[in-house]
Image (tube, rainbow, N blue to C red; front, side):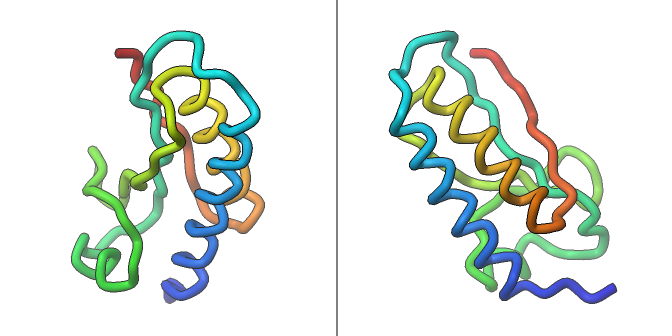
Length: 104
């Protein structure tokens, strides 16, 4: 199956906006964390291809995974809420994603 990078970039852009909106509704209490969304099933895709299509990311831990860039204006609850909203939106759009939870 060919990847529609234009759709992917658009969906990620929308997911980040939704994440920022969700994060803006909460205070930044809670435990500091470095949680982020991971997109899966991208074997044989190089990081340069993702970046060329405007998708900010870094190489994931496993083959076919990319860690998506984001910033939701906080380091605790704002990040947690934003990442969850971002992940939920991408799943609704049909992408295989999960959240990597990392407590600071």
